[in-house]
Length: 182
Image (cartoon, rainbow, N blue to C red; front, side, top):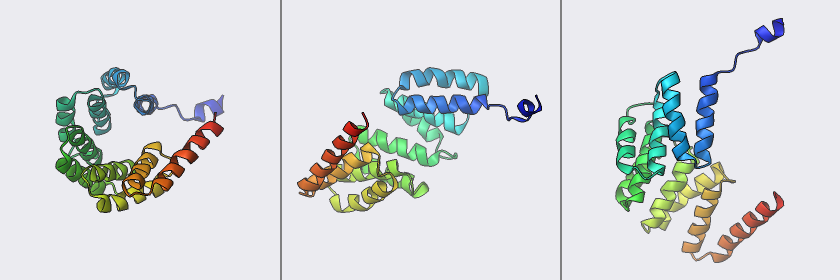
């Protein structure tokens, strides 16, 4: 009985937050928005939950609301993520100048975030600046070598650099890895 009493209680708040994050990792953004509302009713708000809500707004096509939410987070602990979200919104709108600027600011605040580096690299590639895209992309690859989005951006970089064999090798090895894991 004493061992049961000494065991730390599960932190339901943290468990719920992790569940919401996993929903978003699986692209269940509409459902995550409902759970974010329920979470806030039970546990209140925080910059992190507000950022998750902004991400869900962006992913569900509610760009104006997402932008407003991200801007409210620029002076919080979630500022790097908010700049990332603003960069993604600008990219969705075809505004490469602001996309690159916002993604660079996010990278400045969180220099080891592989997804920011990968998105910055993609924005630079989209803008036609292959040389500038190389460094953040290679950093992203080394920080997250198994991330499909990062590897896809690396393949795109190789294709745009006329290194088709390297791009094909990435897709071939990725497909082989996927078949072996089934």
